[in-house]
Image (tube, rainbow, N blue to C red):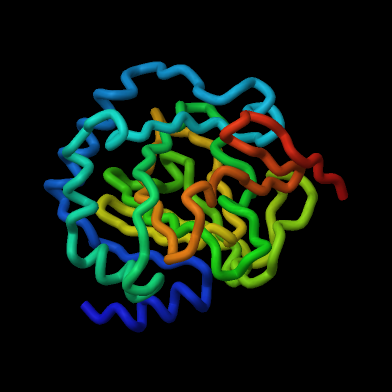
Length: 235
């Protein structure tokens, strides 16, 4: 695989979609693990204030932090390492693995940036793995606005309103989706039984480990470590 053109597309658009990147057998095994962990009706993890203001209904799980070693197999994949190196440089650092689960009928995630965009050099890279297909039948598609990783802060406004130029992504089983942490993105409401994706977050050298502690939404900045709104944003 030639990784240079893929990296160039990523830096042009602020996101990248690579179909059939992961082995179907590995996807099936990890899918069973995730479904077994969450069960039929998992409880929300965030505070009521966060759920209400962020317009986000996603339940996170950090499997490697809990000893779920089967998720280590993705970290060891050479193609993922080589593509990440091409984008971030040889001294890139893994951040954490996070599974994001959404129940049927939930709103998904409103527009946001995963980290503050004040520094162009300091950001997280979302490396999203899909163990099942996300499409119109399931809902929960990821929406991105190409090129916005270069435009600074997500503007205040309606957390859910469409933005000109937005692109709706419908990844298949085994697809890898990369999203720059400054790229404006959201997740559509979930209409199927449930929806999840697994994010192996990474970051370039010199980036602080808490880079994703503050998330930028159209109506607020939120700090996860203190579970608090640190800035109300208005038009």
